[in-house]
Image 1 (tube, rainbow, N blue to C red):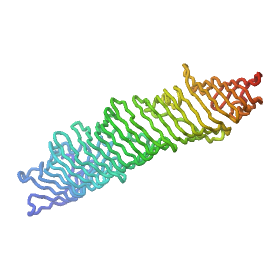
Image 2 (image 1 turned 135 degrees about the vertical axis):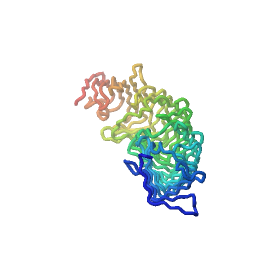
Image 3 (image 1 turned 180 degrees about the vertical axis):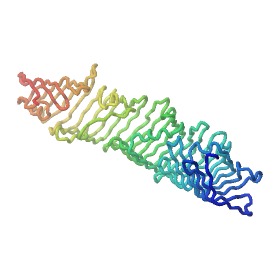
Image 4 (image 1 turned 180 degrees about the horizontal axis):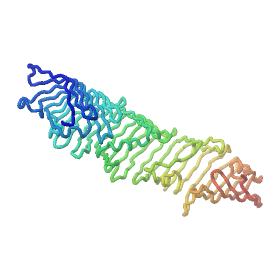
Length: 495
């Protein structure tokens, strides 16, 4: 104790409590800070050896304030059969001062206690408020025991953000956590950082969670929102990153918002084996319809066996800018796609369109490649009962999308328009935003349709004709040949 200064205000003794001493205003400090300030310290002496100061029958800290780090008092040994706190306050620095725990109104104790560490002891504490790196926990309860190098918490819980958590866990000899059960209810968590988990990952030791329950809780991040979510998960492990060797997860939520897309009545059931996640079921309401799929995920690749959408009412955003997908969706493959009785609308004035009673089916479709969303391979068949392209009504439009050996998109389109019919075939290099070829045939339709659809500006007048074009897709920038009644006309795009 040579590095510490101890001051005591007064000492009381009563013959009615012959083996008890009461110390007022006990202060322990070093050359940097005040470590202990206890208005009243009650010490019960060891009857078997009254004159030694290394072991006591009991020590009671009343209204004390302690500032502790994880290296203090390591060189000073004392023990007591019972260490008890009454309305005490403690500030603890751990991880070499990187993290701080503050506990107020601590009540309870340890039996027995030794600064060098007892082989066996039990503990029972409550604290009105705990701050973990400024995150508040109210009405904390800790009960348990220590034996054979393992600390067992039989009851560990508290209130967070108007909710609560309860847990049963063990702190093993290597300081890793074996969490038998962790239950959180009505937790409402908000963060302005998407990677807030990484921010606090250095605090986490090695841990295993056998059963995790999150009930009626909400999470809000800049690009993610979960409202009234429920999660049941088993066999989770953390060792500098999360592992899911033999895990299962069931998830429901009233609402999920991901990058401004709203999903309601969400249900997901997952299981994992050797880092492969089996998606047993995902259901959700989206844009007045429903979406569901099953599949697998492994090595940042999502493989969907069946994807079904029904009664979707989707309006394309004003600016269709697809940001990069998260790394976990580097690659997405769909074996079978079905879309039933849906509506697609684009209201922007430069080229509005709509498709009613829209349906689609497809197979072996690659929807994402290198975290980019699109259609990169496969076959998709589209049809609709009616619609409009740039305010021109169409009936029974039909579109087939396939890919050739060079991975160019091949599109075949037909539709009834104003009492006539159109047929079109196109080869498109989607990677270069370039139409390699577009063959457009019209029967009984004015050639003004080409201008209305922004394919050709001021085309020759005709009712039956064919057009062979090439150029850019966004914006349309085509040149080529217009043919009607055996006459050819050269088409040049006018800037």
